[in-house]
Length: 196
Image (cartoon, rainbow, N blue to C red; front, side):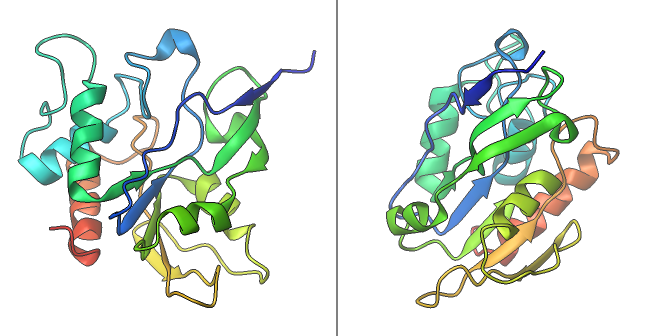
């Protein structure tokens, strides 16, 4: 049986002052979400990592002792710091009903030209996994080798501005790297991007 085509359920966060844009793929299905916002699985460490990097507190975005994060606080943080957030996929098919990159078929990727027009100050694009990285590289006119995790490359999407693509480790707990090492990887990126 063919799985249905899904549109990304969350609107991007696009502060006009953003110098960095974070790009992943697709969120988990509704029953695995603790909020209706990007990286909504409580088991995913994205917001713990961001809390640790910017506030030295892995629970900074958590709602008390509840197993959920605060999307209003997260969005305010992103806007304050100038971090845009947009999926690399507009539509996708979950081949096995989950959000694992290996089981996700991206049908319609992001419109990168439109995204970059909306974000005139972005210099750094960072991805949170292999599929997002490969999707963005697939939008280029030339074939470029994907950067390894924690490395970056020149991203020649448009001649008018210099862009860099930085590949960070997945924040999923399925990715075999300790939380401390993920935090350090993200910290190094934000130092490189001039936000720390």
